[in-house]
Amino acid sequence: MYGLVNKAIKDLVTEKFGEDKWEVICDLSDFDEGDFVAMDSYPDELTYTLVKNASIVLKADASVVLDAFGEYWILYTADEGYNDLMNITGSNFVDFLENLDMLHYRMNNIMPHLQAPKFQVRNKAENSLELIYTSHRKGLTPMLFGLVRGLGKRFNIETTMVEIDRGDLPEDSHVFLVKW
Ligand code: HEM
Image 1: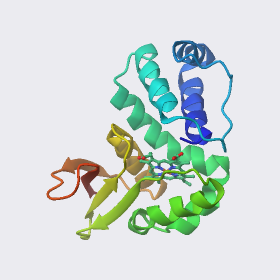
Image 2 (image 1 turned 45 degrees about the vertical axis):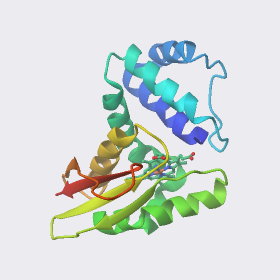
Image 3 (image 1 turned 90 degrees about the vertical axis):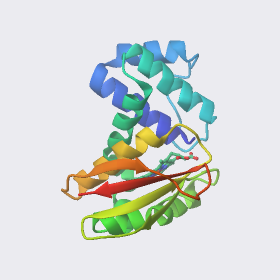
Image 4 (image 1 turned 45 degrees about the horizontal axis):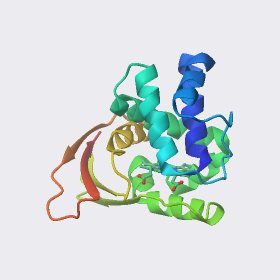
């Protein structure tokens, strides 16, 4: 994944738990470059290793780390210069979710190796919808919970989300019922 993702993990850990913890995580992960280049692409394995070791060092389940990371990502990307992109992605929660592919498509223009996830919204109702998330990457669904919660906060709404049966969809798809 692009260095921007790893940089955000680093920022989250150092901001909330201190530099020392981050250094231990880097040691355990055999990462000695100090920092990441936001616009360089790194092996996915490195991101998974950083999350695994963060969970060991911070004594939290990997799913808790990924969830916290998801929520942090919404604030982090806005801070890192992508707030305009977020503004044009949607002026409300539902529009934003419907335009997630467009957001990543735009990122693809500046990050040619981006392997973005795919999203689809269905069964929209007044205060709920179903979000379909599709990715070749495994194990990242806990991040989705944090991302959607963080996005709700951006629009001043409180959301709840559960994963529901994927039905006939392929195995790399996950379906969530989102309510607010
Ligand atoms: C301006 C805001 C955003 C930017 C700049 C951005 C950019 C990125 C980048 C660079 C990656 C790494 C993928 C790669 O390197 O191949 C990524 C992954 C991801 N993004 Fe976004 N993103 C943004 C917002 C969102 C939002 C709001 C969501 C969902 C609500 C989302 C869902 C994901 C997920 C789940 C991944 C993990 C990769 C995967 O599942 O395969 N992103 N995004």
